[in-house]
Picture (cartoon, rainbow, N blue to C red):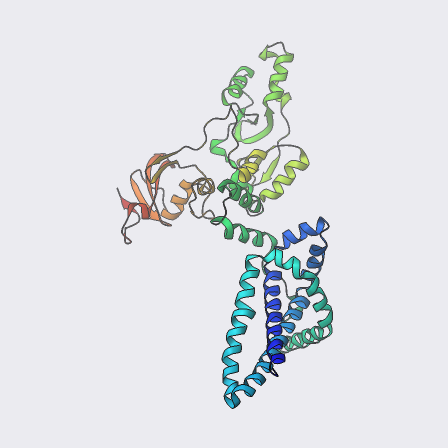
Length: 432
């Protein structure tokens, strides 16, 4: 009976070890965003937990100090007990028994439970941990000062310590981590990615290139201009004079139709030039987030994109930016965009289709930083303008040139190499 106090003490210390180990895991694994949300709603335990998480060094220091104290004390008492029971060999028995007990009941079991129930456990232990932090604060402060001084002696500048990952990188990492695990639709994941990409993408990545830009020659008769506007169905058109590079204004279809109604349907009475709105020119390297903010501030949805030399490169609209977040926005008047046709494991695509759009639509991982379009990616990798029939293999995919107009690739067959069971040494490029 004389050994029961020692046994009971060891058991209690193991329970405390489990508490500290589980608390450490739960507090570090709990979602800060979720805790902050509960704190804003007035949850008392969430407010305590948020305050603890705002001082991570003090929190972790107190938990580790408490955990080490109970583990060392438990081991010392167990050694004393086993020395009484087995003599000098009790040290060996105490080492093996306490290692097993601490590992299973003081570490693995509580930490596994804490990982599976992080937020629930963190909220439950927060009030107790707050008192532990207060009680051990003086010792922890001394330990922190000692550690900082040692690090400073070794040349580490702890005053500049900061989180390596930015907020956006942390969010993106969370999205990637849950991409395959989540039951959320892929479109929702792509929308989250799109929001984060706004600062990384530029206007040049999403603009309508000048080769596909519908513009108006202001010198044409009003009847021709009206027919052009009605034929293409867009809301706004760049208007040029003498040369497509000389953009002098923007014609809004609504203004033209209003003027037509005011002229009793007589288009010859309308001075189209007087209807033009001032053009807005933006650099092609403007970040999308900045351009979105500028659109909202100026209350306009249309801008002409120019390069560093002031040459017109294309146009960008508010809709182009929004489509980077929500995907293609189509209405009953929209014409078909870039066509994609499935043929077994292969895809027949328009060469002008953006790489980013294709990746998002079909889950591929083609590099998006080398070129904007599929045709541009092929040209970049081939280092030449391919001929019809040529085949290239790169980035794990096979690209066959199906059609070309002058120097522009218009149609490509794309297929994963694995789907074709191609040999690892397949030449690239090769002649079909």
